[in-house]
Image (tube, rainbow, N blue to C red; front, side, top):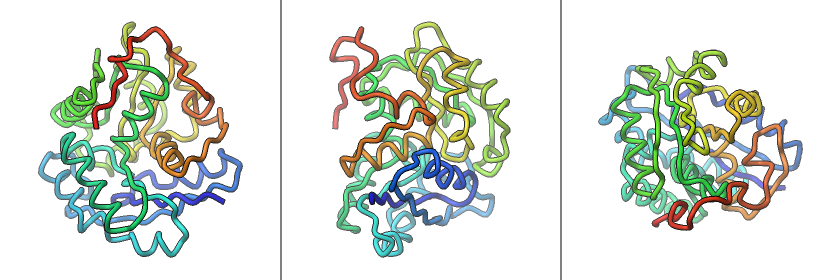
Length: 257
């Protein structure tokens, strides 16, 4: 059995993770602890609120519970709560988590960069439910990793609670809006969106790989445990053993730690 512990901010789309366990159809377990968000309006998409949401003490709330659940690695299952800290801040965030837990640790945002390297992709489109300024923070984070954002679309949601209520057709519409001929992969960077049930549909719609936040979170946790699994119902990321895009120069996929 492989157990990846998830620290998830508040409540929005955490039911994606039990669904993912079923789609993996293996002995992988994904216990989850919901951390506080520090906001009366839960999960507000503002730069200051995102920094507060990702504070070390807040993330660490569930560490002991997940350790007792047998976690072999920990994931801070928040995109904006990690990229909102900036490139250096996001790495410091997970380093602090790893030290406090005594376990390997990462975050959704860092996972996106590793997943792009896995696919051999360096040019992306971003379909984010956030306001434009928060989407811009994610684009800046990716740029720090050497990833080029060739197009982006922002859905204008004010909070994770609002994004969590989006239906699949709205997510698909935003993905179509964001897509660009030069983008090799489309990123949907919010763990508040329910996406686990239809990643292959998104990929068929756009004709290219799609990385969604909850999918990437699980993949990154398994990467930390050196566990590889074949699960094409979770999209291209879970259906490849080697980089699937081979036309890029190495500099296009370099990850600067």
